[in-house]
Image (cartoon, rainbow, N blue to C red; front, top):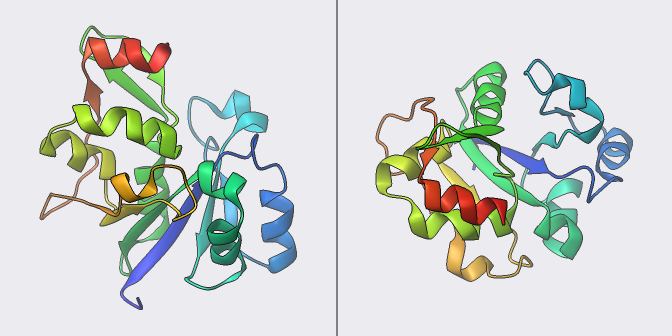
Length: 174
């Protein structure tokens, strides 16, 4: 996997030990809300974690159900600058419904992904993937076998906002 970069987006509220764990293991991480309109909520921010297969974060994600159920792995091309990767991850913090409502979207939650995926067409899946080649859940995550890996259907990935139906927005809010 030398031609890829892996980033885990983890819900730091559900996995509060993620930042100290990364610091202790000397693994690069940051707050996803940093530099976004959500920065005022930085204490509630999910984390992005740059990691490699079989490192300490990978092992945690593959062996701890709480980590597995609270995070999603994004695989990017190795030549992509980190700033573009972070922008790609940040683009779906907020999504828009077809009736114009802005929604805070827990796109890094396997459960949220299971809810939205059946309702998305290939254009929307490409928008969800952003610049990522592939999205993965841990094999420990409930329903993982039905989900992923999810390969970006676009031959030329871009940063395109994800718009969802009003009905799906209602389902996410329930």
